[in-house]
Image (tube, rainbow, N blue to C red; front, side, top):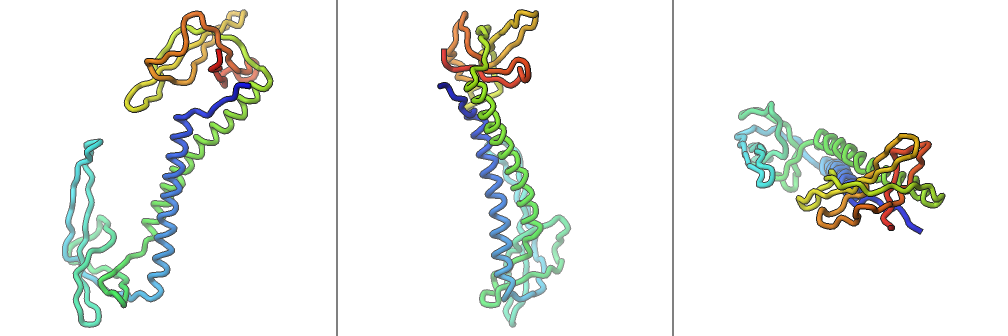
Length: 230
């Protein structure tokens, strides 16, 4: 028996977004855990911002400019002076400002700042990306259950191949096509259905082809699946 297969494009997008969301959630969790461990024995000192350097790079892919900042600090601990780089930047920082930092007494050159703002931003991105990915995957799961129910119940009509048109799917910079099928219900209603996208050089249909379209015409004519079996 024919089975509905998940859309490769939708599944791929779903998994990419979902996995990015997981990564965005793992990073702040690890950051907070290591921070809590670090600050148990850390010592608070006052540091002076000695310099702020701005770096601008142009992306080779998009051509957009990306600006980052490096903040350099000076502080003293147990009679020794250290010149290090701060692990964060905000637009309110100025040369000569005093900032409170935590250092490792066993390695005074190692300093850290509270990661909660960074972690919160990363977690928010994680939830957004994860939700988008989950939405794509849940949609494909629900679609699979629904369409396979129609297939199991032999709920289909025959529609005739009419033409092909460009789809919204692009793979390796190649815009895929999709076949258009037309169905006349005999009561003056003319409906069109589109197939899954395919490579523009491999149209599987010819004029005169009639394909099964699994659909519930009475309840939900907009939710359908064009069979791949001739």
